[in-house]
Image 1 (cartoon, rainbow, N blue to C red):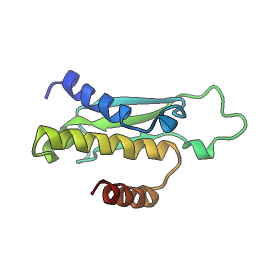
Image 2: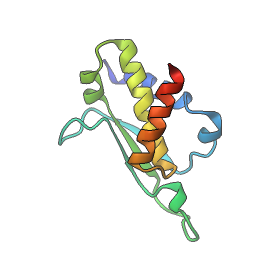
Image 3: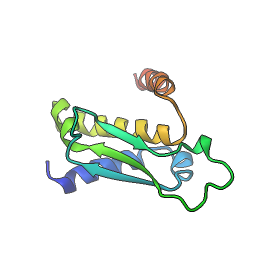
Image 4: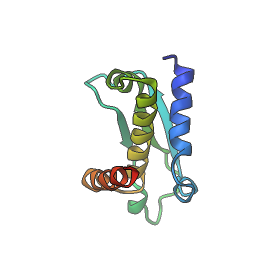
Length: 117
């Protein structure tokens, strides 16, 4: 898939985030990289989660969420599955921005998937 089409999938994933969270996204850039150089990482959050912000947190570089295109394409069997996986990875990394730990996100994902069924 070319980068422009993949960007559309990522943008759809962002738009799928509930509005109340999108409105609270602050000082974060979401970027796409072809692949992760050391393995099959799907997404990566780098920054200081919002729940750790305090006084004096102005004037700092944005947090960064990276979505890795090639690993996602490798695990998806169909275009529809790729779209769903990208949406889930975007959601997962944005949850880190709001301060959720990996364990907490996994629990939220279980609840989310149960609700979808």
